[in-house]
Length: 317
Image (cartoon, rainbow, N blue to C red; front, side, top):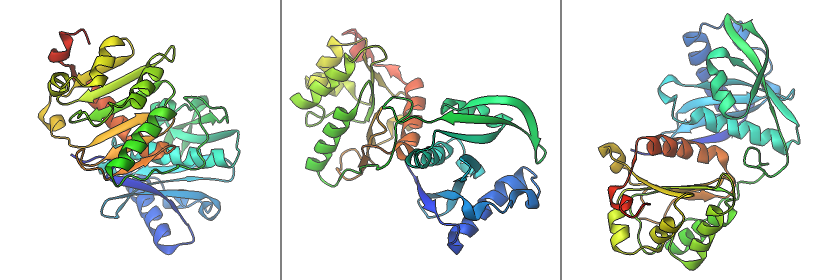
């Protein structure tokens, strides 16, 4: 199983290839699938909008969305086979980030009623009555933007990509993301070796987050806790001392145990991702919620179907 097998880029309406890809996705989703009249879908506003496109690893366009000068998000469309994999969330975060860089106070959208819960999870609030748009029930929604540093809203102006091509760079990236975390961390590890998350500096950051107050939470998915316990890994000892804020679970399904990537997510929009956990080549950034979103979705789903390790339960971890 691979994750982050798509990426989101800014699209230019004036660029022929981008325009064709945007229109083809919207044709498939809105016109063919949902029966929206072509004249209604092609509203003549695209040239003035800011567009984003998601592509898979083969370069095929799989999703799109736009942001208008009127501060409105629209034309959010994801190809059927890619739904439920974080593409829509990544597109949405990219548009919200753009709106913040413009200094806007609010963005709005007209959500299909079936998609209201999706937008509510990202902080949008519905208002007004349900109305018909192209034969489909919709409701207006809005998201208030803020420049305050908070868990719910943070201005994203520069993703601050971190180099990740060697073990030295990997250690530096992990430490930076731990330092950036405020109250929450999510970590996925096939194996917890004594060369990672074991330095005094890293452990100090784990402890700082764990005792940061109400809402502090560090969740770790670890495939092989028995080995870490047997090797007296220092992070395991810290979890034992702070069990209310630090939790470890172990995947139980074979497909999940076969997942070989490692990643770290913090609540500042930062992420660290190694496609192969034992090879220090990957991607990392301090502020890139669009790229972190599919990782977070994967983590949350895997966490729900994982179990507390019987090896660690004997220590009340």
